[in-house]
Image 1 (tube, rainbow, N blue to C red):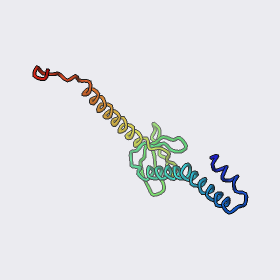
Image 2 (cartoon, rainbow, N blue to C red):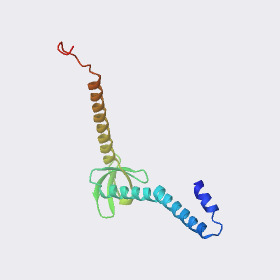
Image 3 (cartoon, rainbow, N blue to C red):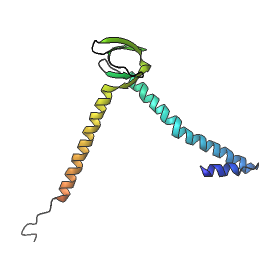
Image 4 (cartoon, rainbow, N blue to C red):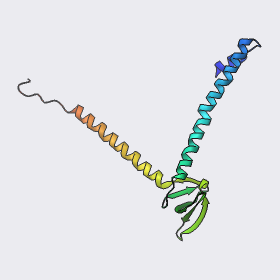
Length: 139
């Protein structure tokens, strides 16, 4: 960032200075794009995919914190049932914050992958630790 400040301070009205100022502005915009705008768009895309992949029976949490199970899916809204008395509520798709069913499945998959990696690592480690037994001919 200090390089950008030096470039900006070096622009004393000369032609080279104005080019360096433009380059500095482009660099700042590029940094902002890759640090702020791009991750936000990626997050929005993932949220939209999650909302479009809702299925009947999924347990969801709304933006307001209501936990319920999806009963009906329509174009713009969904109907969920919540509570012990199975109260039905109609909410907009955009109000869905988290799909707990998919999140739990993803956690199980990640845990299974970790266990498999750990077992593979331990098998490699035990294979290295096994001492080679020399036969009488090799001695």
